[in-house]
Image 1: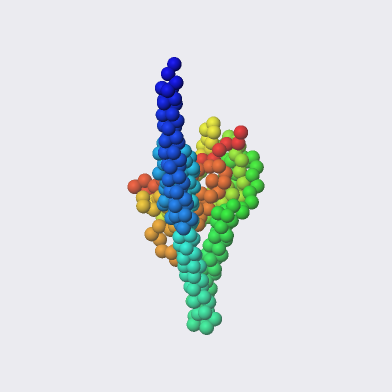
Image 2 (image 1 turned 90 degrees about the horizontal axis):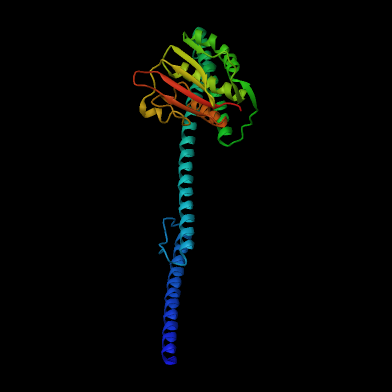
Length: 307
């Protein structure tokens, strides 16, 4: 046995191991320096900073985690900025929607108080002022309801209800209004019992808002309500034969305060459909709107059946 040869190869092996470990250590020190620089950069607000790591780097998991944290913070910052911009737009819209009818209301009341109008014209001004006041009241009530829904502060009382019976009860109250507005109506509600877990007030609000939307905005003279079911869900369809919704507006129809091309001072407050969508979501359901080129708008609600 040549001990000299064995010693030589052992020494060579030790040198190789030492060189390998030294190389790895240098790479780790280099990576730690890069990680430290990146963390300093991120701490200063540069959330676009990312750390590149090789597949065999000992620090790769640290780098991946830092990149994930930075990406998450960046996404959260984008959401916060979007939310801030949305609320700025909301405040601008609110100030306009409140100021416009309020200014008009004050103008009519000042004309009455100053005796600028008399007799029948005075009575007409009083009626107009009362309409403006009711409009403002409805807007503020809708706004408060939407804010409570958005903040998750609305309290619901869910119970197993017969969807068909409740729907018939709600629609019965609408028939005099529809006839007064010269709207024809078609109601298709099966006699069978559909058991749904509902908040009665919330579901009433859903149907009321959809029917009111048809009366105020459709420009048509007919509304239909159709209810059906399958094994898993019930479907409520509310449709009108009006002018329809332009394709560019259909995508935004459930957004708060969105009123399409209508004047901001027009009828409605842009909250009704937003509230409907929130209430449907609370029930675990979905809602969609369709408006074909030839006119008319159809709202389809799907609600899960009680098991």
